[in-house]
Length: 82
Image (cartoon, rainbow, N blue to C red; front, side):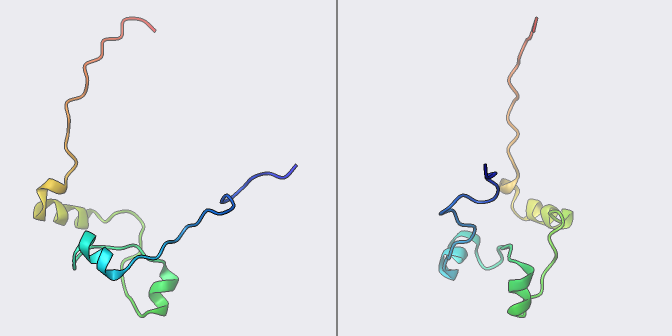
């Protein structure tokens, strides 16, 4: 019996979007993750993705405080027995 590993038949990992769509959603200063191979082949230089850079997150938070996740009150739960 063959193990089912990997993508299912008919699934896809990439889609094509226009620059217009990206600009509407992200604006001129938005960030997009691309493969290193794509960047190298197009002469694009950027930061490697290791983790979200702390400095970038701090800059975004100071420029756009509404982008921070909203902290909602946690529900009060009283568990008396399991």
